[in-house]
Length: 182
Image 1 (cartoon, one colour):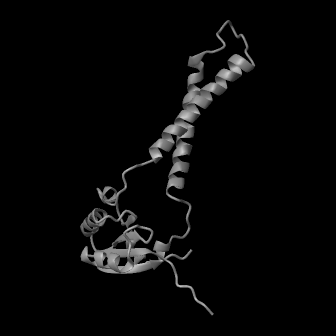
Image 2 (cartoon, rainbow, N blue to C red):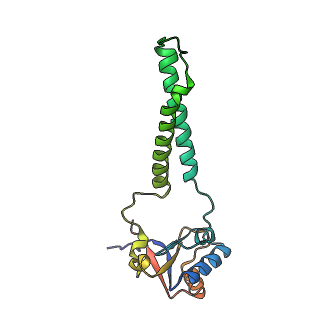
Image 3 (cartoon, rainbow, N blue to C red):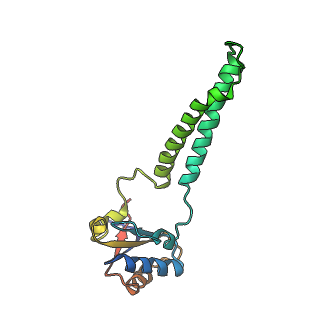
């Protein structure tokens, strides 16, 4: 019976403090690694920049959702009251922009909020009940007192042996290989 060797997800390095992680992330990015991710128990100033996270597309999702809601809400009112079913009430104009403002504003806010939440979930790849990193040694402590840096096997510079040695040279206290479980 033939057994398959498990595919590797990447190499995970454990650090004792946030400064060691920040320095390792800086060195890894400077060495050409681009598929990096860091896991920490609290936010670390500048870590996202050091691992190469430069663009935030959630703001674009919010803008597009808000524009869609605002334009759609205004058009819906204009079409219904000025084109499809015009009623002359007290000699007022069919297209009265000031009366359209409250609904337009509310739909802008609603659609922007929904687009932001949906965009954030989609861009983060959520919901994802299981990730291979969860099986890394000591990873449960990433929410309490340990700091982790992962370099994925899909990185163009990845070589399991050389990457593990590189992370040890960066000051990692523990380096382990993580298998991709599906």
